[in-house]
Image (tube, rainbow, N blue to C red; front, side, top):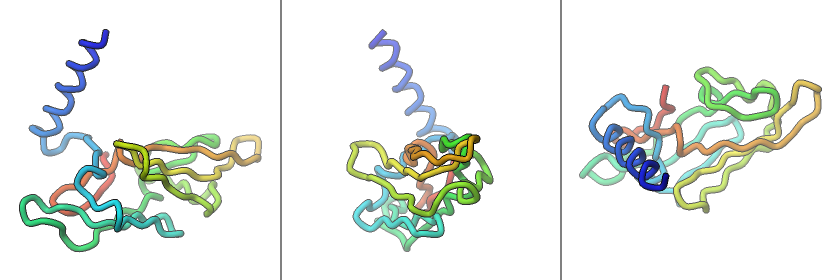
Length: 135
């Protein structure tokens, strides 16, 4: 089972490297996390590598267009609109290797709120110094 999982991971990484439009995420590996900021309007601002040219100017993505609240759980979704039903006391943790955990206090279907988290590194990509959500 370990061999199959390892082989599948290798294949997926290879596809991400070969196919320009692949849904790859992984911005953490090529952006400066020490200069990454989460704004209270849901914008994620950072500085990312532009190939061999080094780091480019600041780049940003609006998480409100990438993340939705599905019954109190954060999910990756185009035009998500999580800010419509989550409180603005959201935050992120970049200390976990290979992950950028974002969490927010979101309304459930019963009207109560719960904290939910999602890994931004799974669906945000750096392409030549510009970050975007994979769709």
